[in-house]
Length: 328
Image (cartoon, rainbow, N blue to C red; front, side):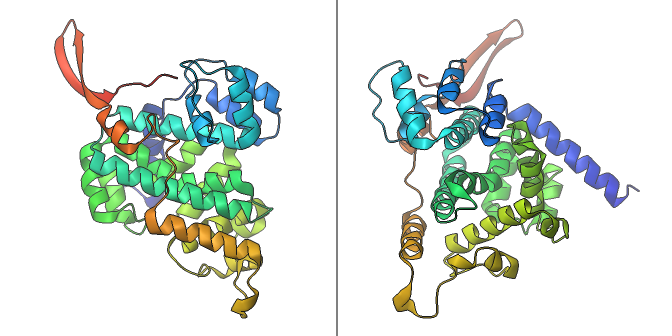
């Protein structure tokens, strides 16, 4: 009989295989992510590196709320978008779009991918607002924390649509259903998310923070590494706010960002805290209205672009469902 360690190793190997087979991204994207997140590239250098084919550049203009004026995107438009977003957020927008396009190109049912994407973007948007309120986090890292959980679910959807559809309908991606998830897929979403972070070029620190946070690991390694503690506290605050709570139940998270705790005197709520709660309340009420992660302008247009395609070769003709690729 296999030991628990053997089973754990097998699940990580299976998660790695899922990421390798599903998260096919432009070859230069990990280099871009690594350079940006380690502050090794200037905005002008970043724009120059965007010349490599395959990157969803229109998403940068849409994320920056800039009009799409031309069939092909001009460099001055990219310069403006990157100036607005910053290089880290720009790289993250590209990565999110690549994963979303890959998911859509696998031909999933709208009733599955649309709710998943809306929830993901809600967490990314709340992470953005939360990060803006915390100097130690910043909007880029807040967005990344928001992306980390559901990114793994997107790749699970690509890997096995039938199993995922039934599983997601039952669990809604809740991490507490760990045994059911492991039995269904051979690994857990947190493992896929963690490996994806490395696959995107974000390094072992982000991968470890993702894995330990999503797995609910209470080991002392979190306390020993302040960056991991900050990541985990950001995650707990994000999900507490998303679920309508004043603060997270995790005492360490509350202590890490005590400036977010509401004062006893509600007449003296700081302006930045009041604004954050107002922004989160809007997202909670109607979910995120951000659509820059979609290849088309709306969910409806995107759903209509997932069609059956004819594939002919020496062995015959088959039909597969996939995304009609938009202009880059």
